[in-house]
Image (cartoon, rainbow, N blue to C red; front, side, top):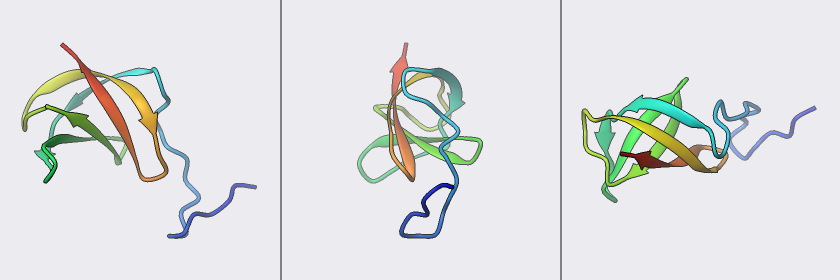
Length: 72
């Protein structure tokens, strides 16, 4: 049985550390990180710009989002 987080979510992240994904940046957050989604799960990519299509390596997975590194 999986533990539920503070917000009641029992879903697991659909991404794994060190895996590579192809994403399109949907927007840029207030910290200047590109925001993409993989199966609805938020992935933040520092330095990415809206509309960019990137290969991204996941470097950290947290309960509500992941951090990716653009492979350019």
